[in-house]
Each structure stands twice: as C-alpha cells, then as structure tokens.
Length: 173
Image (cartoon, rainbow, N blue to C red; front, side):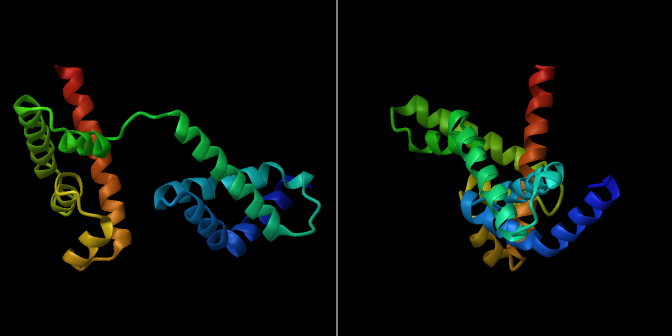
C-alpha cells in the first residue's frame, strides 16, 4: 500500500472507529486519560501494520489491537509499583503508629494543601478537593456543577503542575 493510501485509510479508520476503540480502552483500563493514550497507540500500531491487514474485519482487528495494548499497559502497570501521590497520602492517613506519624501526616497534607492553593484559578479548589479531601471526580463535578470531563482534565493538569513544582523545589534544595 502506498504511503498516501495508508494515511487516507488511517484517517478513514479513525473517523469510523475512534469512539469504539476509546470505549474498549476505557472499559479495560478504567482510566479516561490512559484510554486516550492507548487509543492513540492503537491507531499508530494499525497504521504501522496496515500492509499486513487482510481487510476482512476492520472493527475486530482494531478492537483486538486495542485490547492487546490495554493488556500490555496493565501488565506493565503491575510491574511498576511506585506509589502515586494520592496513594502515599492515603497510606499516611491510614497510618496509626503514634503521634509522630500523625504529625507527619498532618504536615504532608498541609504541604499538599498549600501547594494546591498556589495553583491557578480553576485548578486550586478542584485539586484541594481531590488531593486533600479525597473527593472523587464525580463528587467534585456534582458539587461544582461542572462537567466531569472538565474536572478530570483539571485534576490531570493540577497533578502535572504539582509534580513540576515539587521537582523544581527538590532541584533547588
């Protein structure tokens, strides 16, 4: 298949099946942003292997690629067991080994809350509700009366901004 034909075919496949592939990825991973990434990887892989495709069932072929990509992602996620910031906070909240740990927990939570307040408007309050108060994206969406997708995007971006801030401080320290 010529390169221009491959590109046209990819565009056709994406327009026709992007929602289906995303739905498969979201169902298997349970995470909106991961599903977006794997959907992109699925179409990249399909593009790279278009010349090997026999053309019999595009839908089944793309769903198989998507499910394999999700399985690969989930296996890799099991191997990298580095706790996320939320997990570390939850572990600290659950720790009941005395006053020193209680002090440390309060200190970490107050630092996270302070960092959340430094975020731009629109992100600060949502980040505080999510990271400090432990609210779900759905609960935040209902409380603030904004779409859940907006909340998810703001949480994702706030997490990224917080990471960058912490890394910058670590470099300066």
